[in-house]
Image 1 (tube, rainbow, N blue to C red):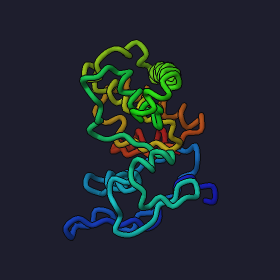
Image 2 (image 1 turned 180 degrees about the vertical axis):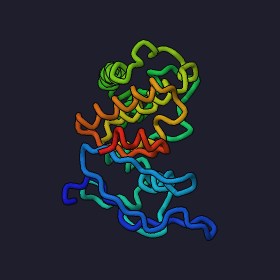
Image 3 (image 1 turned 90 degrees about the vertical axis):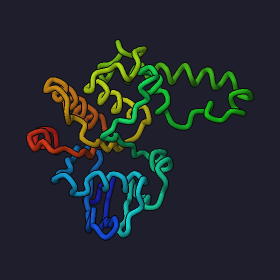
Length: 221
């Protein structure tokens, strides 16, 4: 596959003598949806952790958009265009939905406290633009009417949508979704799968972990 956006070659990872991942390889083309399946304990989330820099592989390489990202830290991998969700969601429950989205925006001028004072007009303009982007994303995932609600007050399915919205806020091209429809209502499953298909049609690439083979067959390329 010469047009692969992501190429993973011969990844291996061992924990205390136990092989969590052994010689794992895959190639994913831009705009595709690919399901990663296997029983519990097969190392699927470990693969995600290695790709996104949260774990170092014992062996193997990862290339994204032609660049070797094998040893990059998570923040640099995110800046390169790969973001992920987690099974435990990792939202800030005590903050409003829209604030969770805004925190996911990358390379904000206001992150530098000196710029907050020296470039105040630019920071304020950027904050206004980011808020509008966040509202647009929430509308895209169907949570626009929840933007001022606390993230912790959302249903579990809505929280899963919010984690996906946070990925979109980072403007990444490759989304790694860890069990995006696990434990949610069937109607929410259909909503999530439709959203994933829309994202792929718009050029996003998705690698997702799922145990429900019907779901995998329904949405994967």
